[in-house]
Structure formats: C-alpha cells, structure tokens
Length: 100
Image (cartoon, rainbow, N blue to C red):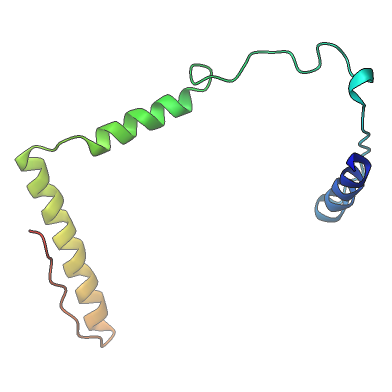
C-alpha cells in the first residue's frame, strides 16, 4: 500500500515540478528512535492562531454608536458608487438598505 502511494507521489511530483527525486518507505522497526521527536503542536508555539483570535474578537466586539454610524455610512457610499457604475453601463437599479 505504502509503496503504491510512494510511486504515485514520485510520478506526480516529477510531472508537475519536473524534478526527479527518490522516496523510499522506511518500516517502523527501521526508523530512527527520535524520528518524530520534537516540540508538540500547541497554540503557544504558533502565534498566528492567537493573532487571528485577537483580530476576530476585535472585529466582533460591540461598536460604539459613532463607529456604527461611520460603518453604515461607508456601506451606503459603497452601494451608491456601485449604483453609479451600473448606471454608467446602462443598468438602472436602486438598492434599498433594510436595517438602517
């Protein structure tokens, strides 16, 4: 099973990358004892997850009334710009915002 997978990988890489390399299957009894040793995966070792969580929380937190008005005004400006672009192309459409 593993030899079939290895030959398929070799063929795929040689087709896409045009390089030739050799991959061999090493059975578990012949593998080095420290082959898979190292630090275990955790969120502390990968700070991108923490940064993503921080930005998600900052984007989803409650907004002040002033910030919400700015947000709504920006969206309305984008909608009116889109209406103008469509009007220039001959499409007459008027967007009606629902929850304002």
